[in-house]
Image (cartoon, rainbow, N blue to C red; front, side):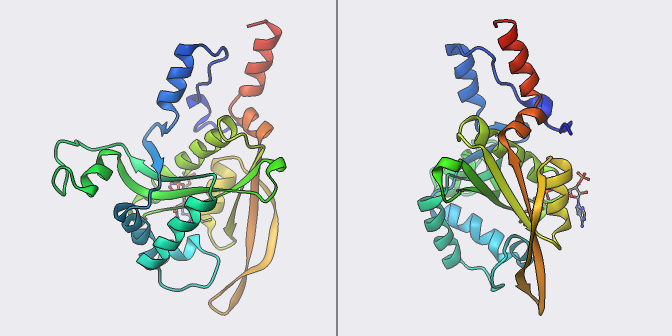
Length: 240
Ligand SMILES: CC(C)(COP(=O)(O)OP(=O)(O)OC[C@H]1O[C@@H](n2cnc3c(N)ncnc32)[C@H](O)[C@@H]1OP(=O)(O)O)[C@@H](O)C(=O)NCCC(=O)NCCS
């Protein structure tokens, strides 16, 4: 199955010249409607994470542990954990608005954060246990008002590209609670992740056991989805 939504957008030069690599670097942290920047241990980024955690619906869908109110303290813990262990941790952002008119006055931390883009969600790639297996798994959440607008699929698609182009990965995993129909729809139908199995009764929520559905994409499946296999095969046959 080819992802018709995003496949044509990936431009990887077949021959690496200084110019083509400069283009690659210049566009690496963008997708058509979004930009991505590292999560930093700053008040602005802690606020952003706290905003996502404080919305109980978003928090409930992204979380499979004990359901308790999110807080600024948990956002501090999350930043500590991801800065220590994540392969990549980014804020998903809308491109910067007119930076000449920051909402909090020029030179403030908020103004500096806005100049890098307007954060709408977080996305983290955690490494698997054994480096030799080159695997990682994705965790993400968008703020409620930015959900259902295609941003989640676009961001995950960008992360797949990053993982296989720059992260040296062979396998990228993602999972969702069985009741999270929207996440399952995005991972399997929109993006082409393969359903690998079910962790039965892995979530205890509201007096019931719920399954976690597990998905993964392999490097060669990503190549096929992006039309890379054929392209690179043709190129080596023709000596380009
Ligand atoms: C899950 C999430 C990342 C998806 O991102 P998104 O930007 O909202 O999703 P998109 O807009 O790209 O796609 C949503 C798709 O789900 C479909 N959908 C929405 N609600 C649905 C429902 N209740 N049942 C089935 N499909 C649903 C939409 O129709 C759309 O598919 P389409 O484009 O083919 O019509 C985002 O909604 C989110 O952050 N949710 C809260 C936290 C969360 O669930 N995190 C994931 C934890 S595993």
